Image 1 (cartoon, rainbow, N blue to C red):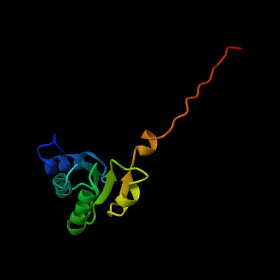
Image 2: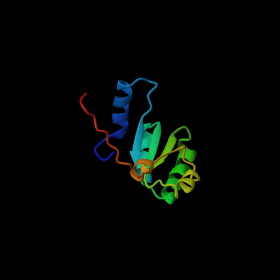
Image 3: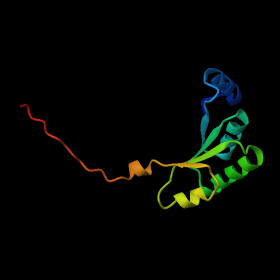
Image 4: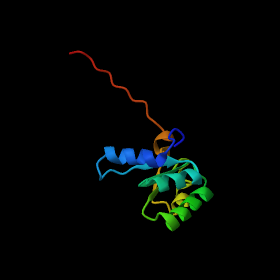
Length: 114
């Protein structure tokens, strides 16, 4: 959003170039960004690296003003925080921690010519 001057105009352009069945998700880092994204017509808003308090504020705002917009929480999602994040009322949670925190096994295979 920081690189787009007029988000509503940008969304009109995007909608004109994608199939009508496509969804547009906008990643936001603050309530102000969320409000702009929802006003502009986002289908899904990602709450990126927001605190639980911020996420609850976003959920309350969405429920009151744009109940049709889906909310996704992302960032700082771990096995220890996922329940609290789910309890905020978001519709979806995404996490890279399954990959980032995994213990990887280093395997190799030698191939010999016959």
